[in-house]
Image (cartoon, rainbow, N blue to C red; front, top):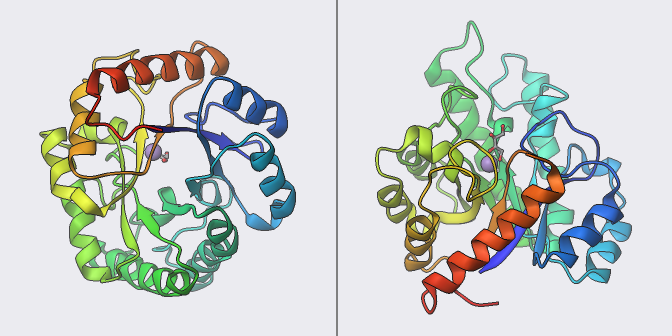
Amino acid sequence: MKLAIVLSTQPAQFNAVAFKGDLEANIAKIAAWGYDGVELAIRDPRLVDGDALAALVQRYDLSVPAIGTGQAWGEEGLSFPDPDPAVRQAAIERVKSHIPLAARFDAVIIIGLLRGIVKPGVSQEQAMAWVVEALQECSAAAAPAGVRLALEPINRYETTLINTVRQGLDLIERVGAANFGLLLDTFHMNIEEPDMEESIRLAGDRIFHFHVADSNRWHPGAGHLDFASLLGTLFETGYEGFVSGEFMPEPDADTAAQRAIRFLRAIERELAPHAPQD
Ligand code: LER
Ligand code: MN
């Protein structure tokens, strides 16, 4: 099982990102604990020195399986269904601007909160139409670079657009791009999916990336989710991507990251020989 953990390249408000702050120190710790990759949360690629970042992850022999884009919503208010066309366009351009870095790392671009919410005065249909158009444009721009986009169904308390895997799959149909798929997150699925294993099977080969947090959004092992069953089901779909930890820095970031990898490696041994090995 290839394991990653979410790391922000700059200070951020989003509280389920365990690591923020000194990038190299965090990368060194994450590698030393045995992680295979870091998922980078990047608000704006213009703020990032791609060469330095590539050299850094290479030095610690880490992959970058995915790039998170949600800080552009959280810190700047960019989103696909904003009533202001300039904001919609800026959101599209921001996603496109991640493509070169994503291509360099062979990373999936995550569409999480950047897909937005239904704002006052905008109908659900109109919002969805803007989301579909934006995703078609971004997927088309990413395809020649071999980059994939993954939309994350997010629970109802964070967005009014695409809460469930079924809604995500309907969106995939409407967008109609081979490089557009889903990111499933166990925290959101636990809130929205009647049967999480069934939803994983339903998404099947459209699962482009996978986030793990326990029921309380602490590290896996801190709540009541059945990760042996969930990850076993995930690997039965043929998933060969990363399992990426996105959880609260509780009781603190270092402890959470170390407990998560210890817990997930034990599950890996339990699942063997079904789980892909490093
Ligand atoms: C981002 O991956 C996520 O899971 C959302 O909850 C962001 O708020
Ligand atoms: Mn997530």
